[in-house]
Length: 259
Image (cartoon, rainbow, N blue to C red; front, side, top):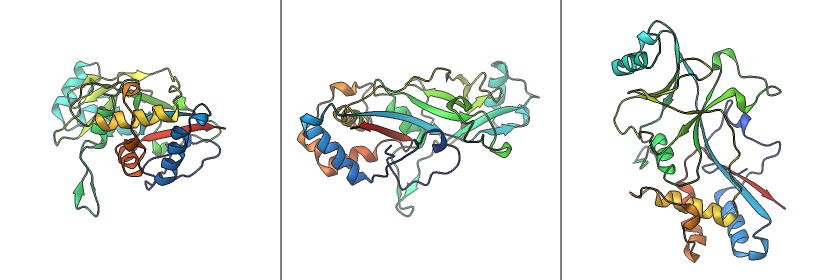
């Protein structure tokens, strides 16, 4: 498994659902060299396959009474959607503010949420928010019983709002099991996936096409089919490759199967 932006510190339950029994730590340069060798050497083209998936893990919050929610449009909208004002609800926060980096001297071009929304422009990608069906205060399930079924997978689609305002936004659930999920502040139905299909296997070249397509999606294109993206010699240069890699959402996971 390769995790872009490896300097990020991972704690808690998220990687417990994802990591294999053995993980091989690569930095960006090593991953570039591996990909370049596999793409350049056509004799090895069919000896490695990869999966790319995009699961943004979140902590589940408990709202003791929906009526205590400060946002009026959220309260009224959720009641119209079947929520009970005097009953509890559950929610996960969406990060819609662009983060500062480089000692707080520069701001990223897109927020975490908008990066996920922009990735939906690339056909064939499956992007999800993952919300646990438990509260951290009650403890994380033991590793021997932990499974992906402990998560609600809320799909991000090209219809999902990017929320470019300065308000705080959430995905709300009427129950801890994920019933009646809604994008808020103006409640809009959210699709919770009950089927967990594995992402398609990609050759190293197809993965590079996917990375380049995501980079191109940061322009104003509507949709893009990554399998039609042309790969040039410049795409196999270190600077260009790492530029594509840096634009992938932080929740990106690459899993390689190689002989």
